[in-house]
Image (cartoon, rainbow, N blue to C red; front, side, top):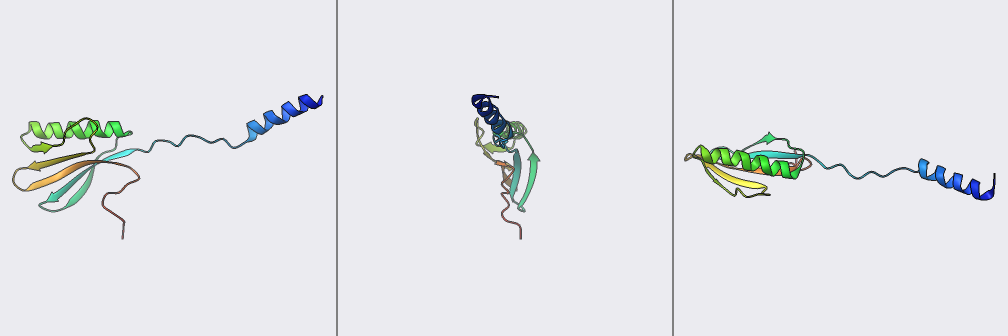
Length: 108
């Protein structure tokens, strides 16, 4: 084997055996419902795969609430937050966050 052939073979082996770096996978998203009154509470209302899907679900839920007669504001394409009011007592928000974010704050 010639020196050039040996060099090409070694270069090929190095490329094949080198650790590959992969692009980071996109995290999932969570659609949260945060009621602030009458009693504060948080609950997950959906688990879409992408930010765009989360926004679409948020808009869909907000639109359904509005059709029922609830007061809803902030329904725009690409939004991450919609405010709502159901009757006189229940007020809250629909919020999109990456699944790596817990909006309730740190655990104690």
